[in-house]
Amino acid sequence: MRQIFLDTETTGLSADNGDRVIEIGCVELVNRKLTGNNRHFYLNPGRDSHEEALKVHGITSEFLKGKPKFEAVVSELLDYLKDAELVIHNAPFDLGFLNMELALIGQPALKSVVANVIDTLVMAKEMFPGKRNSLDALCDRLEVDNSGRALHGALLDAELLADVFINLTRGQDALLMDDSAANSHPGHAAVIMDLTGFKLPVLLASEQESAAHEDVLKQIDKSSAGKTVWRKLESLAA
Image (cartoon, rainbow, N blue to C red; front, side, top):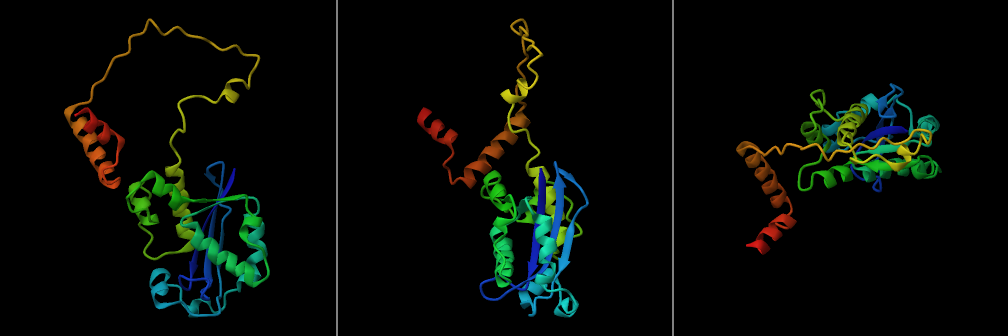
């Protein structure tokens, strides 16, 4: 599977009100491994960045003065993204800006080029409800080193996002093997083992482990505003 982790920097927060893309960073993973086949563009937007945006990315109009316009790099960008799975943090923001840039030069939206889009912000909210899920927060939570991120930068953020994504998705999806995998070698008979003679030991949690578990449950209770199923069952039992 080919995945492209993408991030942009812009002159402001609203593509509909004339803000433009000034930087695009892309990092390629194939079968969950970095390839080094990345892309990085600085773009001349033809306008200044808003003061608040400049504080975030630090990319000045003077620096961008000699950089290419979006239309000068669009063919290379679209060829690079073709048929890939895009992974973006807060995808509607970046896609909104890129689709606006494409529309301005008469090109169709990105969905006509890429295979699909994954939004890691949506993933993180589902995995960590009630918690901060910015890229920096996820780096801290998942132990991804972001010490070099003094300012936002599209390529650096795309690289961090790739590390975050790998950590978000590194768990085993299921304990059972897919039937298709078991049937992929029809010439090999399945080995059936009788485990009835084995007595498995029961390991009880220590007081410290039980206390830590209770702390986690309390945090989940707080995030769900007291709507957890086990608390309801405890109330019914009482």
